[in-house]
Image (cartoon, rainbow, N blue to C red; front, side, top):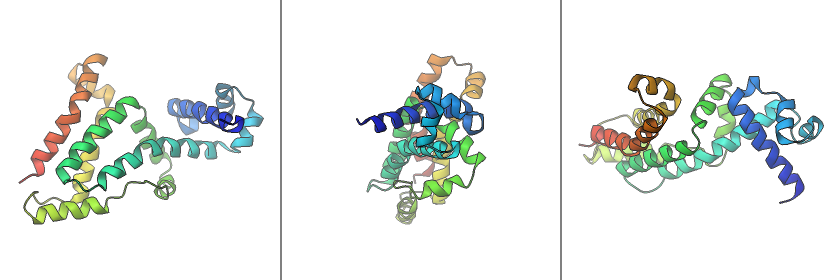
Length: 201
């Protein structure tokens, strides 16, 4: 790895950690420079503003997940298989990166226009094939009538909320960290089964 690539990698890793813990507004360029082990002038050489650095970090974080979800939505498997794979893959991914849902949603709410830049990225999830497939399986009698957008949001909500609402769910269900981890693992299949049973004829 060239020195420039190595330095940029250090900056992005440091910025990711700071942005995840403090958000865009709470992060300071000096703190990111210190975390990366460089001076502030060097940081500004690579990223002349906090906004540009944040966008680089956010795109990197989003790019970890989006192509994976897009691939599932656009393969040739049945809707049932898509629901199963989406739930299993998303849950496994978020167990490795539990900070991502809060980070992404908080920042998209803070700057709604940023989603327009993300939509330009290669691999941004495209629902068109999924929608056509849902309509086809409804017409063939495989699925109950359901709006494809509603179905997709149901899938997202059931998969995302346990990561967004972890403290609340732990308190309501009286789970410690170990039992909550087991609970999340079980949702790889529980969510898919629940959704499939609700939509299959």
